[in-house]
Length: 221
Image (cartoon, rainbow, N blue to C red):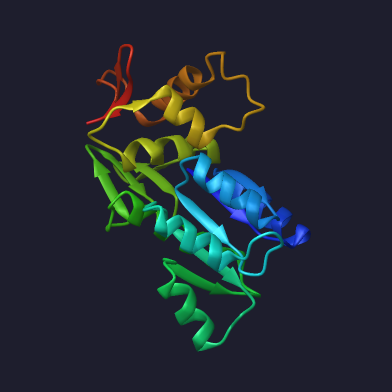
């Protein structure tokens, strides 16, 4: 999943970025409001984490601009402004959630996960596909009750496919949502990741849960 972080504190921006990447998210981060708006208008994000007090353009103006353009983006405001009036103003401007600084990273991650589920219309944390179960709250995968240990990137790939089950996910969509630009995407990095994931989640001798659609992409039916 791809996250945009617009936060002017360099230290906080760095720590949140590291934490989200360790959780398997792809993160674009900036401390400037105008640059943040450019990112939001230029790429397809699953969640935007938005500070309010920013140089260049403040967070509420960014949010209003995006809503005026009709962009159905899921936005979490992250701000030290903690009055009821501040929270109401942010939510009425179009935010989906509001988290007050200081905060625990675990809570931020849980709120991001909730917005991702909302984006893909998933209400239940536990998704069952055949013998496979994906707990998107715990970020845990099991088959017949046995836990399958996946590194964050492979879990993120599986979650992306599961969230869009029934639809073909193209290679370019996987690249855009999961991999940083410094990864050599002209190689077989996506194919290799799919192959590795199949070895871990599929039952030996049974058809793969992840189907390949030649010239199109991949699908979990």
